[in-house]
Length: 464
Ligand code: ARG
Image (cartoon, rainbow, N blue to C red; front, side, top):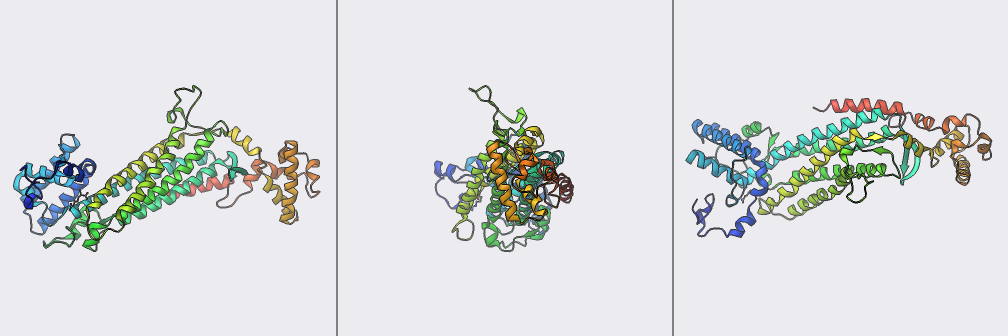
């Protein structure tokens, strides 16, 4: 390379790039992770150029051979990345030319880095979405198995974080399953708009070569070529959509994390997280901290931040490609890494959590969690609901005064508030009676939890 100009675009330049500017404008430090997709795109492009009569078969084969060697060198850690060559695209192209000579310089015919980079990112995000979908399924499978195991486990259900009504732990876990199911659907939906091919848009206006976009599209597994070249090189909606789906997923994971943190505390003591998912304190020997859920809760912040970064990055950008777009990668890649890390941690950890059934049951016994059941009982005996509400309210006040839960009172004590109450009231005042009575689709009854687990397994099996 001449030290006067850049070898890829230096033709019209009369002095070399300022050394700081070269580093400032380079992206190779962070876009080199797309090397596999860059090579994949180049191989498809070379094959297409041959079909179009632009490259000979020998030239195509030399290019493919050279690129495959470069890929192996990168994988073996033997490739030397150069900041002077700016980005992953020019690093690989320069290495190819060095390897196979003048033919390497023909690869970029009918293409620009603008459609090249947009193609690479889409291929990259598509691969990562597929991996993320697999991890989501793994976590959801773990939740179904655990929910089945915990179908009969009774815990307090909360509203306002105050004891509300008894629920089964399995039912609670299935609520998490539903949140993740929506996340799964959102990533599947995002993937549809990721999987559109910019290649062929060239710099912005298309190209004068007789390119066959349908062919590259098929070779790269895209659903369709992008309809408009200006939009193709400038669109980053898919990256924003990815971060949006990721933000919702992380928000759900913070909710799960928060509950795990609460439940592991001495005050709740509902679950035990195996030691391998926790860490200790350097000063307080008794401590076992739920670091994994805490960290997942904290990591949501960076993903939300990346969503805002990308929205702001794209705001007001005129068509078509602008250098601003190079700033899409770090937020997007960090969002991907964060989602993958959090999912892996949860998919490993959640199936291993152990419920403390006696403690959960004890907590459900406190806090008058069967008060609604008593009201429903009175209504079944003919009392209007508002009157029943009043009777139960008085019973609860008496319970607070005497430190007795409803199920611990004698029949005579209960009858102080209504003579409608009879011996059979104790069937509904038990925790088991309370949960079993909520026996409909979406209800907390153990039988419903088991049925929901079966349906959940069916839903997972329908995923291809
Ligand atoms: N490194 C650039 C990016 O990440 C590649 C495209 C550069 N195109 C250009 N005309 N300078 O966006």
